[in-house]
Image (cartoon, rainbow, N blue to C red; front, side):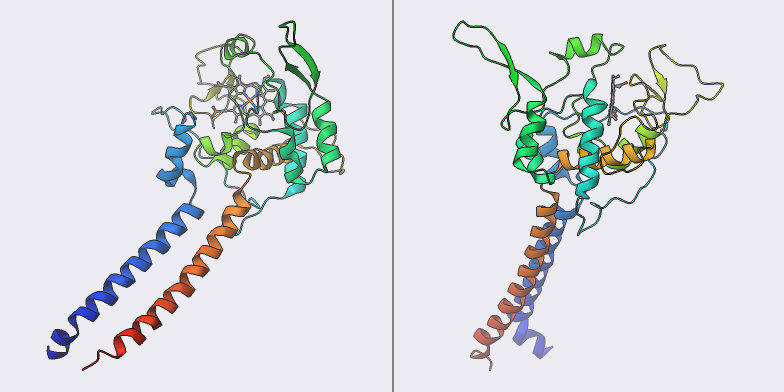
Length: 290
Ligand code: HEC
């Protein structure tokens, strides 16, 4: 008891210090490593960007197939070759309907393209620019500073060409849906025949058990051999879907690798700092011992 009374200030001090240190580790771990659906800080940020969460209905949907992705986990990284194949799938298939507003051609240098190659990809698109000095808009080949052009001029035009539903922008899709990558992959590969007792609400939809209403306006976008990969990878539906998912994860979070590295160094730094502070405290308080 005597010992407790004498040392109560130190005990409280060390206790408070430990609690604070543990709490800050948890905060750092949480902010750097947890997925956005568990992470209200990130979720609010996405909400601020105007990204809608999927509407909730009471019919249970199929749980996305759980895949292994190179970007999963605390030290996850992008498989750059898969991301580049995914870009090809986006360009040759998805871009007919979906925009990718937040990605500029210059960003392609981050996934292994040289500046020259990124310029060539940019130049293969026609961009509406202007107005010129006569007040007219004109078309010119894309440059590195341009973003990917949208397939439709506005959401109304997009909806009217797609059975009444505008195809959503894909830039942040991998983050805008719960379990994003698994969901996108399951959705793209999940078209199956509807069970006999399923009554669709509309004749412009296709049955897909991973979509929240079980019927999606997007027709099955992928078929075996749809694209021809430069690196000789076989273009099965499963493969193309995985690749485009890798690509969409990169577009949604291009700084994932930097974030993981930063998280690791911050945790390491905090550990060293904790030790230093602990021993400094010991040294400073030593003189005051009875
Ligand atoms: C023929 C046009 C078309 C093509 C091609 C197409 N989509 Fe879609 N997509 C749509 C439409 C329309 C919707 C909206 C569906 C709805 O809300 O019912 C949609 C919705 C989506 C969604 C969102 C589902 C959700 O939860 O809201 C994802 C993800 C998606 N598409 C990915 C892709 C990918 C990846 C590709 C390329 C492999 C692709 N789409 C190709 C028309 C298309």
